[in-house]
Image 1 (cartoon, rainbow, N blue to C red):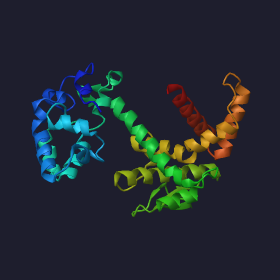
Image 2 (image 1 turned 180 degrees about the vertical axis):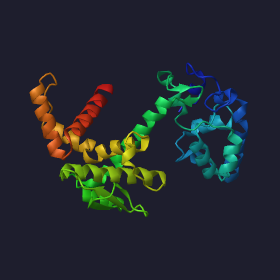
Image 3 (image 1 turned 90 degrees about the vertical axis):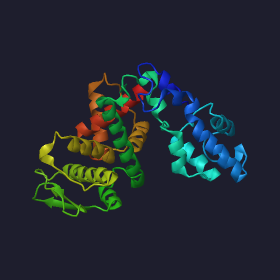
Image 4 (image 1 turned 60 degrees about the vertical axis):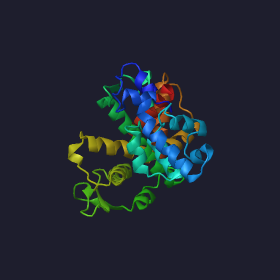
Length: 294
C-alpha cells in the first residue's frame, strides 16, 4: 500500500489522516524505526529476506525502510518485522511514530473524497460502512444455515444459543439473561409473522453479540436505529443472498415492464422464502441495485 497517496489525494490536507507530511514521504521521520530494525536484524544474524519473511512486505521494501527512504507500509508490517528480528513490537511502533494503518490510502483516494472531509468520515459514509458491516455479519451467520430453503428458523436460533418462546401474550423482547426471546402471538396466527418476529429477535442477538452487549428489542420504537438495523439483518437472515441468487438463477425475474408477470414472480419469491411480499421486494431491489452499482 502506498501511503504517499494519503498526502496527495485531492481534497485532503497533508496530515489530515493522522500522519505527518514528512512521515508520509518516508524521509528522516522514519529513520529511527529503520535504524532500529536494521540493528536488531544484524544482531539476530538475519538477512533482509529472512527478516521480511511472512510480514507481507518484500525484502527490497524492508531495505528501503531501514535506509529511511520509504515509510513502513502499515502498523501490522512494523509489528511483524519487529517480531522476526527480535525487537519489542511496542518499541517498533513508538519509533515508527504515527504510522498509517491499512485502509487510510484507500479512504484518501480521489474517488472517495466526498466521503472523507478533513480526515474524518462523513455521517453518510459512516452509515454506509455500518450497513456493509451488518451485511457481512448476516452473511457470516447465514453461512451456517445450510442449503435448505426456506431458512430453518429453529436451527438459526440454535446456532445463536437463543430460545424462542412462541405465542407469548407479552410484548416482544428478551428475557433478563438474553438467552430467550418472546414472540408475540400474531393477530392472524400467521406463520409468516411468527418467522418475522423470530428473525427480528435473532438479528438483535446477532448484533448484540457482535458488539459484546446485552440484546434488547423495543418494537414500540420502530423508527429507532436499533430497530431498523435489526429489521434489515432479519431480512437477510430469512432471505440470504446466496439462496436468493440460486433462486433467481433457477427462475429469473421477468422484465419489470411486465407488471403481472413481475408481481407473480415476486409472490413466488415471497412464498419460497416464507416472507411478506414487501420483504421479498426489498431484498430483490437491494440485490438488483447492487448488481447495477458494481
